[in-house]
Image (cartoon, rainbow, N blue to C red; front, side, top):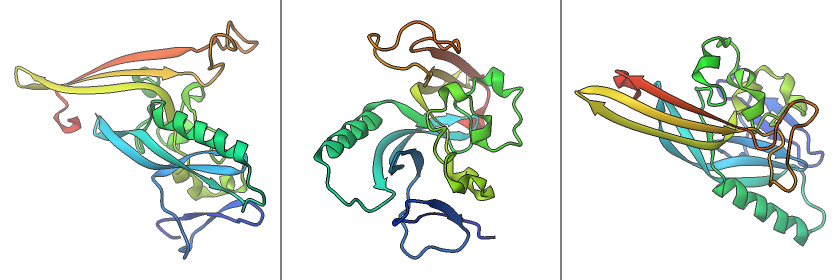
Length: 214
């Protein structure tokens, strides 16, 4: 088995599949941010904002929309909507880590099954990219785990300091639920599943003496 599997899009049909052999004509990206109808959204630029327990944390800065199929007609309205969505993804605070579950609080992580892939440990409420590959045939491939990246929307700040020569890390995370998110004119109250409009979870973390995480 190849160490680096490839995700292949069949342009005539739009089908997505996994292959273990090298791909001659390929496009590299940091990760997949999602699949939207006939487009696959890839992260093309990110910024490291710090580390948590030695795990790097990134903020998305740029994305690219790649069509799953060759467009037959040029739609100016669709171009305008895609531009708006790209602006939202660029300006909206979205964060991820390749090796640390940012969707779950430290308390929930203490009881999680860490033998599972990262995306299977993620909290569905804050897993904004949870439909990345779950509806395509590639989801049955064992190597697909590396292409499904949990991304959350909200706020994350990491501040490192020392007090009396003791390293300390102050972390503030606010996670916005993907259920019933929207403006107050369209998202209010509670739905039949108990999801309230614009729910946010805020977590404060203080790590003391973990010099390896700074």
